[in-house]
Image 1 (cartoon, one colour):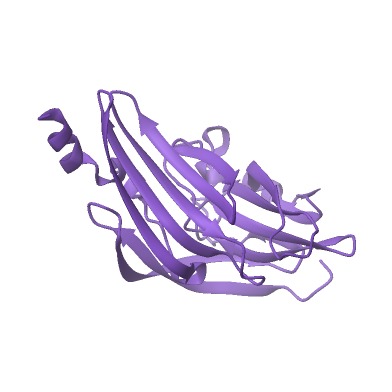
Image 2: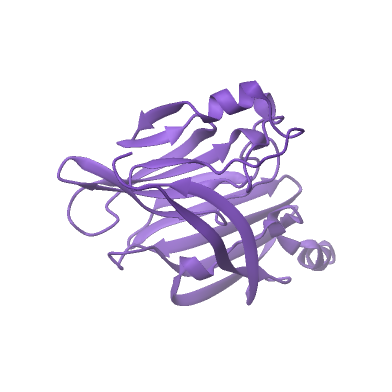
Length: 236
């Protein structure tokens, strides 16, 4: 924690909604967390009913991973080694989940924004720093990452995959480019709704859409709005 701590407030986001998850609409997300260049921790709320001494003790303890310092309030759920700024040095993407979304500590609602985070970590001259934090790209549903199916490298960057279901199932895949050396960009969304081995797929392409204007809502909670497509597949 070598630099002055500053606050990230009021991330203005765009929601990917409607039946094919393709229309963009603006929405303000009242989300707060605190970070410096190498440290991230929760912005605590003053609500005696929502926090206790144990939860506060956890939140005020820290551990170091991937070269940065992270509050124990956040659990590392996933990571991906990838060069994010084209300097031939391997950086990292990590997925963090607040304890309030984890079943063993879901009573610990001490933060002002219980969302899972995607964090960019840039390595330079043997040191690491946080470049960007995104709070709208990973599912927040369930006590674990219940619809999240991982991050995978692609030719131009990486993809985040969510999927769920059995006889009725859906897959929601977002593809990102790392061609911009300062931030990630959204390039494609693929949605697939399946029923009994049949499926309908919709694909939407974007021209390097900046992620500070993107928020993926939990349409995943609504099974990615596949109901209409499932009805069509049932008739085949």
